[in-house]
Length: 111
Image (cartoon, rainbow, N blue to C red; front, top):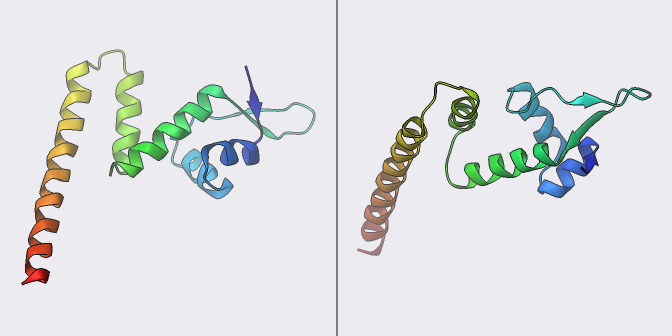
């Protein structure tokens, strides 16, 4: 499995190093392993996939809080698919409202 230092991970995901560290601070990532001889953080393919998921979820309008909740539902053995479905349906309704509002603004600006 491939291993990455923080700069390599950030580059692969198309974000900056500070963002990776911020996500770590928010506990969106598990604590990374450290290279014994240098204490550098070491990331793997799962970390990259997680980072790409976060990036895509943000592009779709999910907040970091909502993304963290999605991750916690995934980890929680008691969580059901319905829990994830409920959260995503709620987000879809929010997006629908935003689209309607933007269309109203567009109509007003064209008048």
